[in-house]
Length: 225
Image 1 (cartoon, helix red, strand yellow):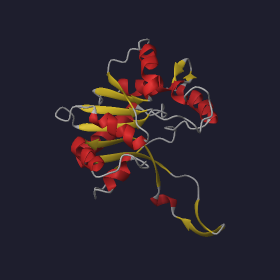
Image 2: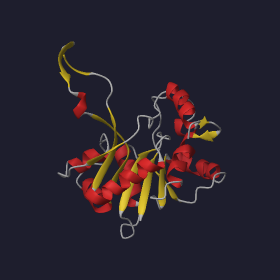
Image 3: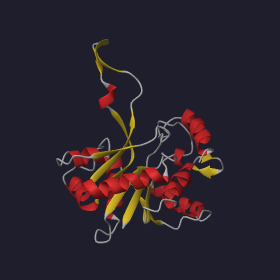
Image 4: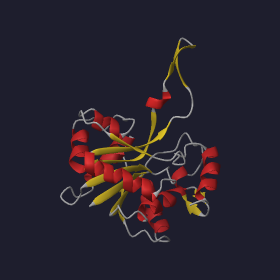
């Protein structure tokens, strides 16, 4: 069984809206519903675990009833950090029934079903896989306010989500980590075990909504789905 853990437990302080960004509407649907629908429609996903702030769970359940989310198995409370929220999600699933765990940011509603499937398949083959996108800007190394070098961007990639792992590998990664500290992503935890994480080339359209202007772009791109 392949399970997706969708992490949407953040407070959204950087976004600056009164309502948490994951519940703001785009094209008549809450952002988090768009994200869930990407995984609902993906044949490689069997179940979905959604991680939300504790105080939002009951309200979300009422919202979710309006949409046909058959794969949404459970909604659980997140933690103080992203790492703790993912850990809570991981602890909620049945290890005996789970082969691959795919972790995805709730604020990325533009991932495609094909990207999800390719990432899961790569994790099945190699143990760990990360969806990535090319770096298109020229990257400079800075020291004391001055450019001291130019980094070859051909060797660089932006880490996207989902990031997928064989269950036992991810479980060991968390067992050796402090969940109270925020890791940059789950690949970082797996890398610390000594595993080489395979990359899967994804689309630059798979943006993470972090600022109000991202909503404008996301609305345009979602109309193309």
